[in-house]
Length: 114
Ligand code: AMP
Ligand code: ZN
Image (cartoon, rainbow, N blue to C red):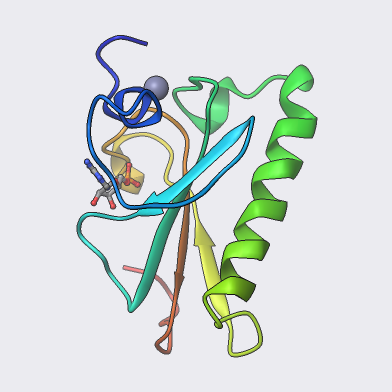
């Protein structure tokens, strides 16, 4: 999608610190990290929100979770613990309308979230 910042990152029209890339996903460092480890796992397919995921996306979503787990292991936070967050729509705090898994870790997380 032409006016989507994450699509532009996928197309390398906007620079990012890429952590991992494959045919269906891209992982890059969040520009405003909220924890020592804060990476964003995104599909290369433009899907605006969680609510737009369809049945045909099931393998893609499973793949994104698998990639998030790989990132947690590679970053050394898997055993300590980490958090996967996906915001959906304004009250959740979603600001970029191309789905992404925040992978957060490297510090103790709080509950309930803010
Ligand atoms: P959300 O608010 O859940 O939609 O998350 C969007 C995330 O994207 C925020 O954590 C931002 O810091 C991050 N972000 C926005 N623009 C960029 C960018 N150009 N490069 C890396 N991360 C970004
Ligand atoms: Zn997009």
